[in-house]
Image 1 (cartoon, rainbow, N blue to C red):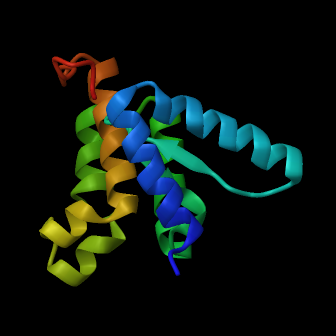
Image 2 (image 1 turned 90 degrees about the vertical axis):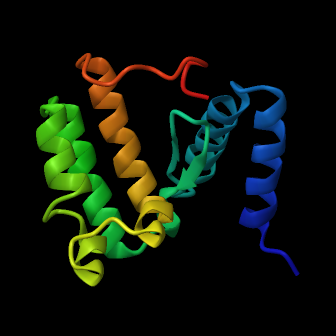
Length: 136
């Protein structure tokens, strides 16, 4: 039997292909419903429209994302953010790879969130260009 979150992820991907703004609207609707019912679901929508449920991350990954989010909110310089949180000592995934960003690291959901925060900083600070299709 498929898990509900797998089914919802497939539906979000299907709908996002047809309407790029759907993922953000869906995430906002889920968050409103979660708050209304007392559920602690936390979703993050990447610039590409991928939806990541932060509550499914390990405790260590959640702490890493929270530290990166805090740095992002403070407006840390893009290069410092990338060197510290993406490719540096704050990234717990790199301990097992000898400091290298492998395919497995790159595909990790927590890494995708932190990398996306770096992209957002870079765009906001003018050091990273937006994708020609607006990030989708």
